[in-house]
Amino acid sequence: MSDLALSLADQRIIAALQCDPRVSLERLASVLDLGVRPAGRRLNTLLDSGDLRIIARTPPPTRTALMLRIHILSGKLDQLGRALARREDIPYIDASIGGDELAAVLIAESDVAGQLVARQLPASGAITAVAAHPILHVFSEARNWRLDVLSSAERRAFTPPETYPHPPTAEDLSARDAAIIAALGAQPRASAAQIAARIDAPESTVRRRLTALRASGQVQFETVVNPARVGLPIDVNFWMRVSPRHLDTVGRTLAQHPAVHGTLAIAGAFSLNVAAWFASLEHLYQFTTEVLAELPIESAEPVVVGAAIKRPGVPV
Image (cartoon, rainbow, N blue to C red):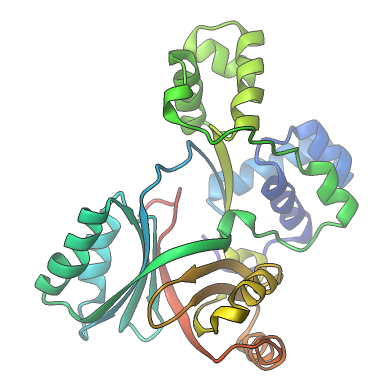
């Protein structure tokens, strides 16, 4: 996979699928003023190369979510990174460019999280310190980030309505619903006809249940992008201290910034974790001195990411 930036036409296709990962080729071509066949070829190339990935999944169960900051002994990063990446309850892992720090998201029952932080990590002999920050509130996450190459009208044209009339639960799913979701997990952009053939169900029923499952939030789609391929090779995690009176305002403000792909309110020595992508270190400097400097932030510690060890939908 190359790190050279993709063409604007390819980036616009990616941006369209961020709005609706299941957008039809016909609508994609119409709104972006492309032919259906060229749009299909470009999309297939993006998917085959891994520059674009689509994920379908059910909402995660309600469990303790922790932001882990792990300081590592010299030479132990690869060993510990691989071990953590094998865990299904850790969907995100970043390694610092200096190789001395890992940042990870852990979603697990409280006793499992406590055992990892208090016993297993210290017993590994690979760390110097670990801090576990409970995630209190999610202002934005990676699936909310949008590549800024579409007009407002184009973005509206691609964005489907999202209505969650009640919190989705696994108990609400029928066997047929579960089969539809499993088919989407294997092929997130499969048509209703393809799913119907796979699970031996009427196409009209599959189409109706697809609409209902998506509207209720019982199946969710995410577009995963390789930031380097859209001209944003610099990934940074900021550990910030913000006073309680300003935390909500700062979190909401940063969540709306085009560079930011994750904003979490956390407990512990830091109160806000912000992840952002930049075109260059100069853009990081400008963000720090022009955006962060204007907000009531007590301190902001940037950690440049050297490697994204684990991401949802991306093979480890």
